[in-house]
Image (cartoon, rainbow, N blue to C red; front, side, top):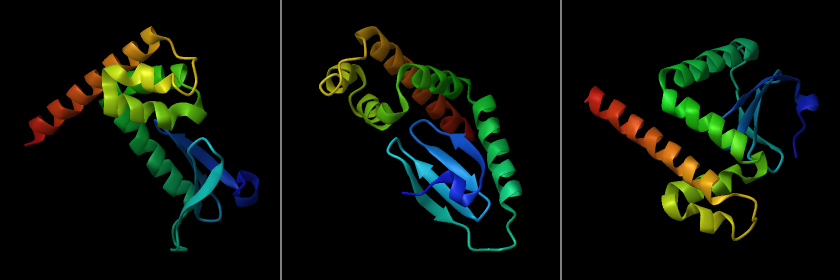
Length: 138
């Protein structure tokens, strides 16, 4: 398992179900809820990792600013679901939508029906926004 201190962490970006850590030694580590693992190694020595991280941060902030339903869903999702459960809960929401609550509570009974219903509605709004943007570009 990789450690952030060993690689010299520059910064982290948090996505829906995982985090990426950009490191001084050209490595990018990923944590999906079960510890940091090597995700990618940038081989080109000409790449400045601090600049690379800043570019990714600007891209990420632009995506959040230009997609209000994504920003709303991300905040709601992160406030409701602990980091270690995010992949499993997100899969249930994507696959089952309205049936996500029963699937998620098979393993851990800590999510209320109302919380899951709110998450599913926010996810459906997000998907409608993405579909609308895709149709607008065609």
